[in-house]
View 1 (cartoon, helix red, strand yellow):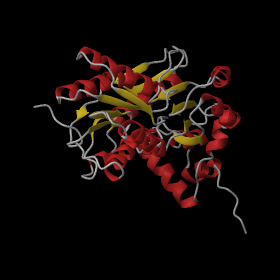
View 2 (cartoon, rainbow, N blue to C red):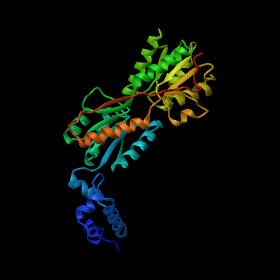
View 3 (cartoon, helix red, strand yellow):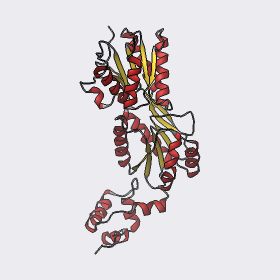
View 4 (cartoon, rainbow, N blue to C red):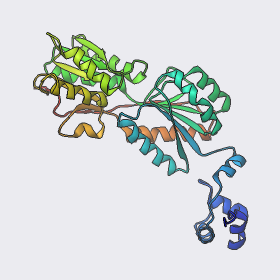
Length: 336
């Protein structure tokens, strides 16, 4: 026989306190003395009581759920950042609900109704593009939106990214100082601000050194397409002597193709650099020179911005770009 659910009224009666005291103890951020909290939790544990979060959300109008829309989990940067974000929000009494969508803006509308139905307190868009429908619906529902590792030229949205322009510039300067003269780029998905900003900074860095981009192909942040891009650039009579690949995930595919199919040595024949500094980049088989995205700090800034937007709906959205260091390893020729 299924037992009836224990209520806060019964916990309050057994503990000899008011129902509001029980509510305060189980409400994140609410005040209750340590002595009273310990007493109430002891009774609650004995009775098997757990607060009904959904019922509380109907009363408060807050679900304490943060929606995260993500499309691109093949890149190790996103699962790692998502784990850190979930842990940081849980420590503040929030939980993450993940929605999967394709990268382009049109596909986000397919999960829009589900997002709104869950009455999330805020929405994080990671590795996906915004759509005009989403903008209007979230504005109408009063749901703050933050772009993670993406940005948009729209003051209504908070965003947290690494400084992709500065990162691209650092990579160009490093390759030029290494003596390279035929420097190529394998781009990611061209609808992403991360791709545009990284390439912009890279081209600016080349121009500052008196050089132009030697050749270019598109890998679309996809492993197999990145292999095709490597074949396109390097299976020629005049291949590049260095290549900036728009993220580490693609760089691994490029390195495998250069070595296994084309018989090129890294970095003796060609230097390869990436972006993100995911853990695999440090493995001896890759030893990838790359720009590190400071995910810990990016998550910290994201949580601060999200909670501020929830607690202060009239606050101005913040656009944050965090500088990431160049991590020099063995995949690229080092400056003399």
